[in-house]
Length: 264
Image (cartoon, rainbow, N blue to C red; front, top):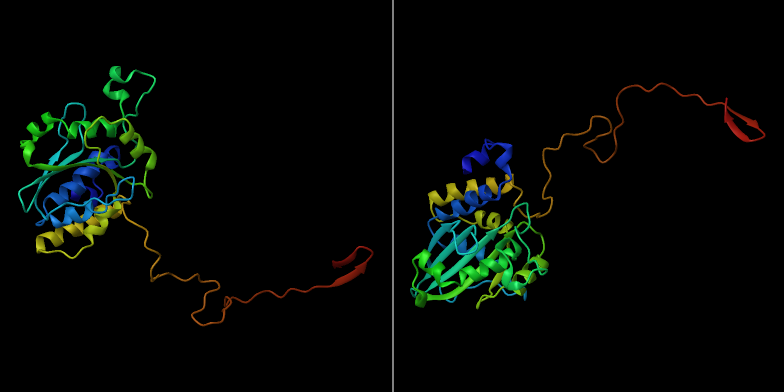
């Protein structure tokens, strides 16, 4: 998939697919040699109080589970992180590229009667990540889990406060750890120094994918080079050089009349 995006071989019908972007970028991170890369990306996630996502110990292993079918939802990715002490951290990721949440809370319907499509998408995912059935599906022993988080991954340039607050408001989960992260953070990490030659190859391709999908940050214009001059009034000197073409002479003959000067 990475090569199809880089070489422009994807049909227009799937070019802006969230699933394609998710599988290409997060799928690429899955094959990097060290968990440090994905942890560096996740560490930029922030909650409604401005608190950054952190882990109590160094993460040594990451397992990626793409689109798991849970009780009431299907998050894009669930990361199962194992730290140096053997403890497990669960991080669900709900990725949005060009679209908003798939469902909002319908308060016109009694809370106990609301169907999934009438529930806030982030609320449902928070609840499912905390559900014991999810742990069974992921093959995790509940006693080993010490943290559960949900990351809302979007292309916003500022914190999507409305989406985050509504997700928290309607969630009935015991742990409502909801964070927001920008897609552009993956580009930042892809620019990090690589640890192996294989990492270098993967990171370079991830940078190209992010650039093609406009998932980068604006860092200023930088030094502008190789700008072709305008042949009319351009001069490499401090003074302006007019075109070399000879201009026709213009003659003016002003005559005085009652209304003022006119061109005769």
